[in-house]
Length: 196
Image (cartoon, rainbow, N blue to C red; front, side, top):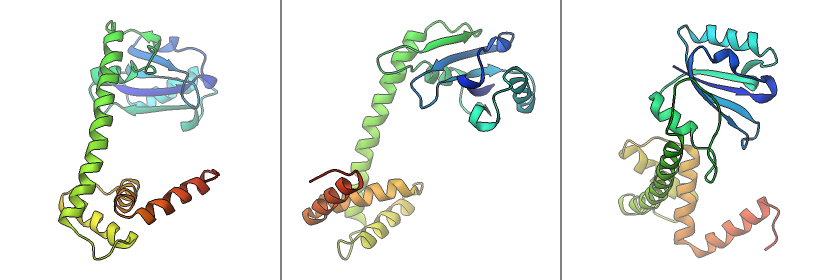
């Protein structure tokens, strides 16, 4: 199974995929409208790419289309494809997999999405508190707090993600120093061209 994305400006129809088990939706709310779906294609991905190039000659490179080996179960990916927007169901383009419970999958996606978002926020707050307890810093500076956050993540075998680390450091600094919080607000306002 392959996950496929083809931008609509490069391809008018997906009829050429009807002979394969596939499920595609049209995503208009993205920065560029595109078809996104899965296809059970019997040959190598290079062969599927060649087919797409032949049937959609305007689709060139990653800007026009993408083909990847599916890394999760087809059922899970179909649920993702059924997300639509929070208030609208997906715009179905091709369904030779006979997926029938699209509304159910749509609701399940948004229910799980809300839980993940809630869990992620709680986890970040929890990590910030745990860092303070386990790796107290000598002084409240960006460098000291960053070192404590890094030590915490390494000791707990957590992945190192620069944006996540920066977010935790800023949270800890803003939480523990009102002067720093005021500076942070001013910095954010300047960056976004807002007046205080």
